[in-house]
Length: 303
Image (cartoon, rainbow, N blue to C red; front, top):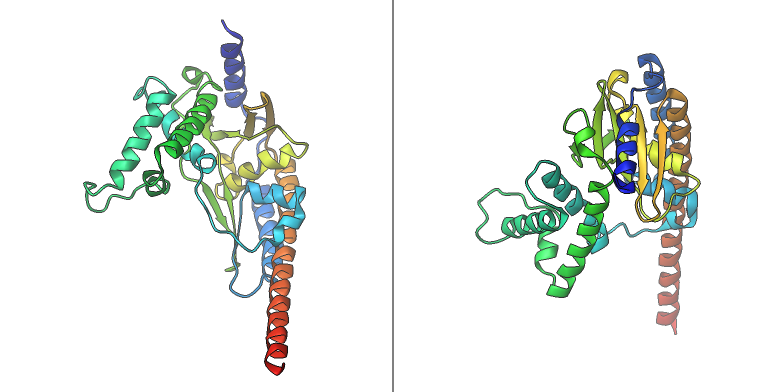
């Protein structure tokens, strides 16, 4: 038995081990209501017409680099790094279900399917993946970088677990969890996990991190667990989140009880407050710049 297979077995056992303390329906309902009130109050201060969608990345940015929360440009630009997860989870899905012998073949199949979906021969009504048109327009060198990033990412996830040891076929990738702040507030939370394995009716989540594990890893792992709990009842709330940082070989396991969910909610409120303050300051800066430009224009006309 190799060291890597032994590590995968250990991590798989940790993911699907029996749940610990349960979260009561009363405690979860109280947490949901308290968090909703706090976020409604914060979002009321957002500039008119703005909406805030908060994911784990934004929570970490607010804690680590609060100055970046003033950024006004949220334009999404595809890149090999940004699309490697979408390609990777689809490729791992194919491998685990026996549709491909390995990540390289699986990624090639996924990319070929995307190209078909954006081709002139695609059947009417077919919805292509978000990355497909961008990938189709890349030159050969750019496509090679996309393939390399996706195959590496897929290999890391595929070798992280001993898939046959899972009690039933897990959900790999799948739809993100979305929780809309109540009361019509312009704020929502988005949680994402790479793998969801059912553990006595409660899912265990596996999340793949980038780089190395940071001191605030509990917030990084707790966020997808919190969002998943908010959109479910207590009996089907996640029991734990397992974090894997393949580039540094680090692993962390976070049991989810009501105390951890509350601690994560507190971190989320603090992050949202930072983002709201940043949006307010960004608007003030924009108004100030506009007034300055108008004043300079007026002086130029007078001259």
